[in-house]
Image (cartoon, rainbow, N blue to C red; front, side, top):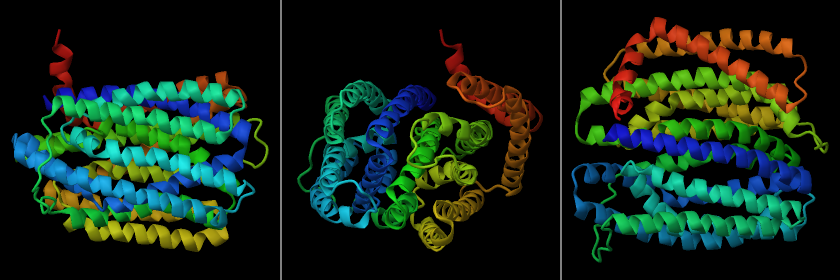
Length: 503
């Protein structure tokens, strides 16, 4: 059942990512064309500041999932309803605090951003983007936590896919008919309400969730430790764009968001394969099925290295031609920055490698034991980025992220190997060495093949280059996996065989 849910979650998430990728290629491009880099930069920066309200969640999401993994696995309905009552009440409080934060941000943002965009436009953008966040916290987040813990993330994926299509069509029509950007973002916020209403309706219909008047306020025993992780992760994930907003122009922020749109889609694609695995690991850990845990985790881990090799080798070879074609006709700033592209790929490759280990730590509820490294990561990211941004600009910010990612990744690998999996670190050394060597070999071959195509100055050439690059990376990775990872490939086959054999 766990395997079936995992594949259902993965399939629907993959469909959503394809839809989101298409939408993301269309709508932001139109925003750049019709409204310019500064407006695009303002919108991205406002959204990043809005995400900072997540600090008020103070770890409740992670702590709630730890409780739900156990209560759902053991069918403890009273515990589940106790937990959901606590989460719903808390999230409603956060949503109303958000209203005050939105007002505060609308007042100060025009004065901390380096832009020629009018104060009126900035204030209205803050308000309409904030509306979307309010709907999410008040209506969507509590029930999203329940579905994720019950390995039913596919429900959200279905609703999100439907409304993403609607959002794309409506946005294109409005932008091409010269609607103001405020109207476009307002309609986007209203459309997002449909996603959260869908999730709410599904949970009410399929779960016997009821409010407990005298609920246990101490049910989230790990909330404080999870809070530290939440705040540290929030700082780590948002510090780059916030620093650039304060110290650089909105056009530089726009460059950052265009590059990170591509990387964001890659990370989202990765998440579409792995999003259900934390819940699965949590379920196995709650049932103390440690043999299954080790085997499942090894498949997850091996798949992560394969993904990094195949996908990021293609990204490093194709990202600059993509940026050149994507920003064609946008001449207010140069978007072609090779060093930035390389640094971002390094940062996000390291980030993806740590994902299985972070998932295992969270699934096992080891928040308190690992909170110090989460804080250290945030401090390093913020500190190094602030130092380097003065001399190296946007590149300096990414260097800070790389160092922070390396620290957190190294610790997470060590902790999981020694404390949760009881295995030799030679396994990870082998995996990382294989990943680095394979990426160097593949990128060298890809660049040699792409030179034959000549200058990639059209989308057709880029697609051909993408197909060739992907074929090379996949061929090399599969061939070397047969040599070095036969056991992992066999485990993977055994896992999916029951699904393949079903008629």
